[in-house]
Amino acid sequence: MYIKKIILAIAILGLIGAGIFSYYIYNSIFTSNISMEDSEKVVYIPTGATFQSVLDTLDPYIKDKESFRLVAEKKGYATKVRPGRYTIEKGMNNNDLVNRLRVGNDPVKVIFNNQERLENLAGRISQQIEADSVELLKAFKDPEFLAENDLDQNTALGMYIPNQYEFYWNTSAEEFQQRMKKEYDRFWTAEKLEKAKQIGLTPSEVITIASIVQKETAKVDERPRVAGVYMNRFKNGWKLDADPTVIYAIKRQTQNFDTIIKRVLYKDLEIDSPYNTYKYSTLPPGPIWMPDISSINAVLNYEDHDYFYFVANVENFGYHKFAKNLAQHNRNKQEYVRWINKQGIRR
Image (cartoon, rainbow, N blue to C red; front, side, top):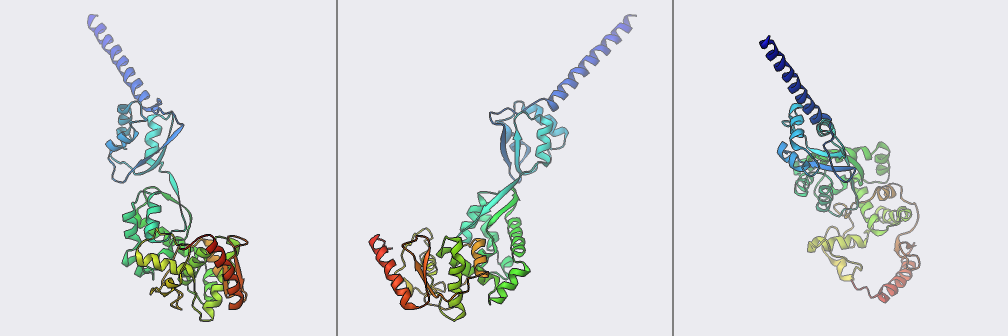
């Protein structure tokens, strides 16, 4: 009888212990373990991160790290950390949190436009995905990739069509580059390729002229007319005589791309650079700027007119006055020169 009581007591204690353990496990899994003032936070888990580094990242938001560790180990996450961008929410339990870290890699919106060089583009993209600017620039300038895609370091910038794209944060530099090539090919539809062929340009040449148009006018509705001027000059074998190309040539020559030049001087027109369209009748070796899609379309659908000249319109800032002959242009130009002198702009 005494032995039976002992056995019963042991059994009861065992059940109590099992109950306590089960309660602990239940709490570890399903009780809220995220505490923060905001309703949600974004955390970044870099490529190659260890489970300990994940714990360190989550430390400001987790109430009980040991219960999180227990659940993470039970669900196999502790040995299979996944890099990415994750949104964690106030009140999440360990089970929800581990599930989010296993499969909830959030995409990010990557936006870029109007970059002057590959270096600028690399810097802009590195602010939005995990790959750093050095890795990105190396990929952008990779000789093998450029050769395979009929590009060089002068034309490579034209492969990146400015827009908004969706990526995973932990996208590598090479993955970003490959995706942009696919977007470039998608952009150049059969219809666009045919339009380029009809106006006697390759896609790369379209983008080069579009980059000049982009720098000449910020007014989207004026871009087809400006593009028409350059196409008239191009088709008639004229030099493009585009001030933005001279400014770009100065920057390349001095390697000072941060300089601001508001006025092109006559001496600048003598700079010996393939980008100087006052000196050479050929198109520049590549784009001088990343053109918007509106500028690319402006070249493909340029306005058919008889204008060969244009100058800033001081009576309607942002727009230009167009002329069909040099005499008319010189009158318009004198008006602009008087205005710019009055403003004291010397450079």
